[in-house]
Length: 180
Image 1 (cartoon, rainbow, N blue to C red):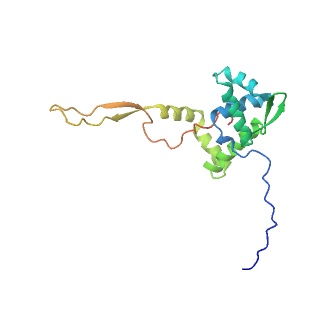
Image 2 (cartoon, helix red, strand yellow):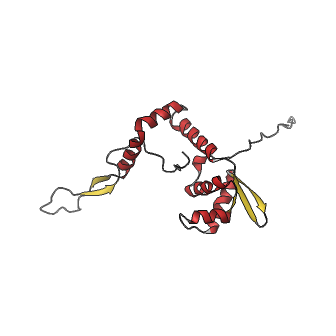
Image 3 (cartoon, rainbow, N blue to C red):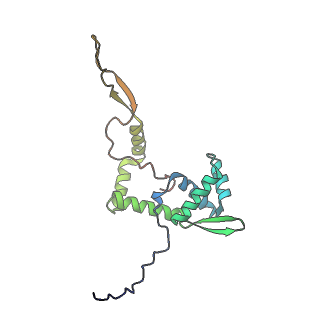
């Protein structure tokens, strides 16, 4: 066997910045960021207090969320006394731009003009119509009984909360509308 030369290639360094897209964040992660963006820097206790106004959550839940955001590279933290102070790595505007860019690339073949045309064709009425259509009840026939009675009537319909017809485009429920 012939000896092989050892590789002297250095691993490629990752660029400094968030590893995850803003669209990949859970709703509570976005809520925490929405508290953090206006302040610029906060502790878990401060974020927990601000979130408690809308919906009470355990302190440890907010602590876990902030730790995950730090692991994902979305926020940085530094120790101050006994607490960590968290800072967003992206401004709210940068996060919006990143989210819109990902939507344009993923849904509109990289064409911002196609997104603009889509939004203008739907207008503000389009959003309300899409929401109403998504919540409109749908009549679904009930299955026939195992042994039909002698005087069977036509199958009854049950109202179900679903669209009346297939909807081609609905807003993605995981997007935080405050970011877009």
